[in-house]
Image 1: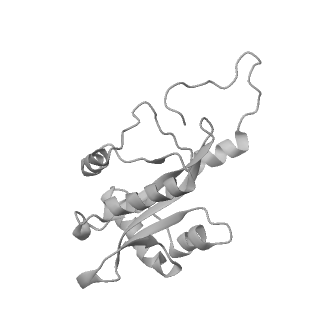
Image 2: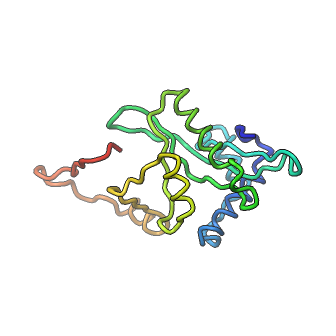
Image 3: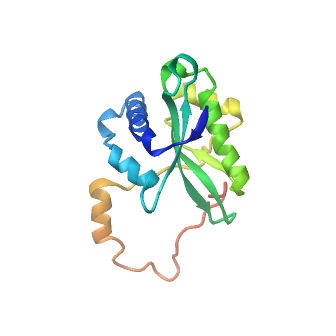
Amino acid sequence: MIREARADDVPAVVGLVHELAEYERAAASCTLTEAQLHAALFGPEPVAQCHVAVAEGEAAGEVVGCALWFLNFSTWTGVAGIHLEDLFVRPAHRGSGFGRALLAALAAVCVERGYARLEWQLLDWNEPSIGFYRALGAVPMDEWTSYRLDGDALAAFAVNGPVRALPADRGPSTRSGTPR
């Protein structure tokens, strides 16, 4: 069964996120706490949403998968979409349709609310997930490269950021290709 996460699901979802980090070979980088996730999902200004997969039968009631997501917005189309931050199903429950059902629930949210797209990123070595997503009809956006500014670099840029204006003849570059 797929449903929206409740506050009492937070410990299970944090556990799933940590399992995902281990699978992605980045366990040491995952510092998410229950308090942080609770605030992100249920605080006064929620910044994320979550759907969970709940087992039936022998493991009835156990949260065995999750999809953590937030809204994005395309300035080219003028329409919001969903960015899927994490999709994870415990290995013992893979192949049972939970991953597909979680994504279908997010697709339904998109359609019901008039959102234009559902998008996500994954590690280039994650062949099982690549095959899974392609089988759903998703297409890779190979023309885009993701960047991140965090940690010391983010703090330094916040302090020392753009100290001069761009010359009048040189503004921000424009891109062509897939709408953002």
